[in-house]
Image (cartoon, rainbow, N blue to C red; front, side, top):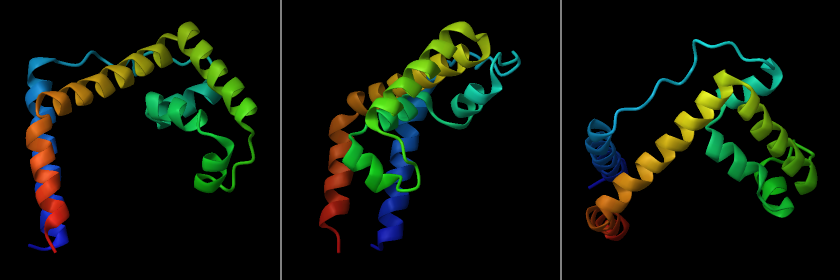
Length: 131
């Protein structure tokens, strides 16, 4: 079995697992029909998955510099920026809805993986031992 076939099988399995949980928990609207009160912040929130953005901004300086060498912000500056984004989400209905939707999606995917942990582990194990 080729690497591409294995990767495709894993992706298909993960998509099925998430879809099963998705059918049980319909998502709320994202608030995209509402205007953003501060588009400079709103663009960051609209363009990025909110939990991923917060986790990225919280990286240590050494990891952040390695992953994003062109962005020269210290951990303290990134923490301040993260606080500003979070504050904006409490004040802006559009971005608050996007933040909530992103956080709900993250929990949804984590739940799907937890409910099917054994199956996912088996597929990943088989994929790891295939040449």
